[in-house]
Structure formats: structure tokens, C-alpha cells
Length: 321
Ligand code: CP3
Image (cartoon, rainbow, N blue to C red; front, side):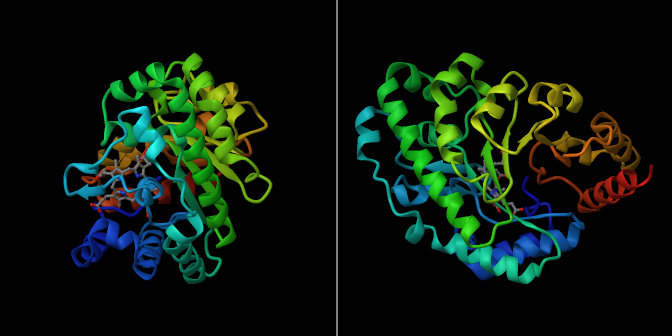
């Protein structure tokens, strides 16, 4: 999940000098933010400082991040004609600044912890393209999907090609693993996931697993885990709305599982954080292939010391017999 963010004073200090997108476009600063988060938190992996929506920026949809309101697209996709106008672009040129950040972060980490690259998944990217922002019910996204299935599949196929080459280039630049964030796909029924999303997520991940481990994550996906596994990923990420052992029994013993502490638990007193971390570890029951993680990103109001306390608790509890 996100580890750098506004909850961290070091991050806020860097953000005084750069706008959010501007920071993403400065490889040195992005690498520094990535590494500072690892050092401050004591976590076992780094995630490159970037955003899932960067892959949409070269499509000329007017991507902005306004403080407080989150991402906004000035020119959203509302009709099949809008889809036809979207051009594929060369991810090697347009997103070169991300690969440079990956190279510099990896160099700065000098093997201390692995570095995770990432992208948004076709469905979640399409939801931002169509809604023009975050959404509660994804009404416009689903309406588009049902009304214009041909244009929908064209759009997701285009996004899948871009995501596949973007992730592939992050691996070439040195990412030790990659994560596909299908953050909002949990709004779909299993039948709709299979018909409208699965082939495109599979295409987005095609060929990557043979190079590095691939993590496939979404939230609210309790009813979709078997299908997400079918779409691909060596590791399936789950949020806290399903018990880790229940999730794992659907996903199957031949896949690793990442998760799944509720990020809001980090606002609780450290004793409760430790108790809840122990409960997640108990459900993992020391099976190989559990990656302890939050079920979603850290909230801005989270005390950094509480994150540190969680990291310490997980290290301690997963070492003792
Ligand atoms: O540790 C790191 O370096 C994290 C890098 C990272 C960011 N975004 C930076 C970011 C990662 C892994 C993401 C993923 C991301 N971005 C997701 C998938 C994860 C998830 O939460 O499901 C999504 C849906 C987005 C889209 C996005 N970006 C939203 C909805 C927002 C606004 C919400 C908010 O907290 O303001 C962003 C902005 C964003 N991306 C911030 C950061 C650090 C905060 C922006 C700021 O500094 O003002």
C-alpha cells in the first residue's frame, strides 16, 4: 500500500517544495520519498513513490490532484467517441521519469529491502477516466459498461496494453516485484467481473510473473477472489472485510496472500494495534506465503509512531514461536 504520505512530516516537508504531480515527475525527489518512508517505518519492502493514475496523464485527459479533493480529470471519457479519440502512446518515453525513479530508489536502497513497482488495473483506471474523479457507486462507469460494451472492451484493452508495457518497463528498471491495484473493482458482481474485467486484467499481467512476483490487489473483493486469482498474480492482496484464512481458502494454497489489517486500526492505542496484528497473524497460522500488510492505504490522520509500533509488533510476533 502507500507508505509515504501526508501523515509523515518528512513527506509534508518535501511537498512544500513540489506539487504532487511535480514530485512524481522528479526522480530524485520521488526516490528520496520512497527511501525515507522505509527508513522511518522500518518496513521490509519499499514501494516506488508514484501514483496509479500516472498512466492516464499522457492521454491528455486533464489529470490534476487538488489538495483535499483528490484526483480530478478535466476531460473525462463519457461516450464511445471519447474512447475512440484516446490514443495509445509510448510508455517508454512518456513515463520514463517513473523508471528513472525506480533506478535511483533501487540504487539508494542498495539491496536493504526489495522495491515494488505498481500500476492501476484497467478497471480502476477506466473508473477514473469515466467518472472524472473518485466515486461512491461507480454509476457512470457501470452504465457505460452496460450501454457500450464494444467501446468498454476497446477502452480496457487499450489500458491493459499500456499497463503491461508500463509494468514491464518498471521491472526492466529494477523493480523486484510489481503490484496491480484494482482498488475499486469490488463494486462489481462476479458475473460482471468475469465478462467485463477478467480478460483485461489477465492481459495487463501477461508475461510478468515469469520475471518477478506479481501482486494483484483490490478492496471489497471477498466475492471476487477466485476470479482475481484466475486473472493472475502470484500474490493476491485482500482488505479487512474478509478474514485472512477464509480469503486464503478461496484463493488456494498455491498462491501467496497479502493483508489484511484495517488501516483505521492504526488510530487505536498501540496495545489494540498489537492485538489486531496478532489476530491477522493467527489466521495466517505461519503458512508460507503470507505477506503482512494493511488492507488499504494509510490515512492522513495516522500517527507515524503507531505505524512504527505495528511494524515492530509484526516483526516480533512473527519471529517468536
Ligand atoms: O509509499 C508510497 O510512495 C506510495 C505511493 C502511492 C501513491 N498512490 C502516492 C499518493 C501509491 C502506491 C498510490 C496508489 C494509489 N493512488 C491508489 C491505489 C491504492 C489505493 O489506495 O487503493 C489509488 C486509488 C490512487 C489514486 C489517488 N491518489 C487518490 C484517490 C488520491 C487522493 C487521496 C488522498 O489521500 O489524497 C491520490 C493522491 C496521492 N497519491 C497521495 C499520495 C502520497 C496524497 C497526495 C498529496 O501528497 O497531496
